[in-house]
Image (cartoon, rainbow, N blue to C red; front, side, top):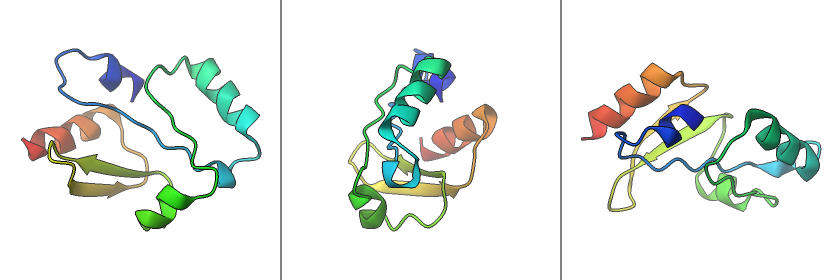
Length: 92
């Protein structure tokens, strides 16, 4: 996701919501972000409000949201770089 975030040609905004209720602590999340040098926004969903609103059942779950703010597609489980870009291209 960091590579996609840094790719100026990809007209994509990456936001990774972290459901901190599933983590051991916010500090662990911060350490993870620092360790991987992630620079995209990572809001903390401490009460699982966002996860509940989007009916998240599997982690990670990736929501591809179009320019109008509508969910275009959902991917369950981890996505590699190529698959992520393929999903983005399918939206265009």
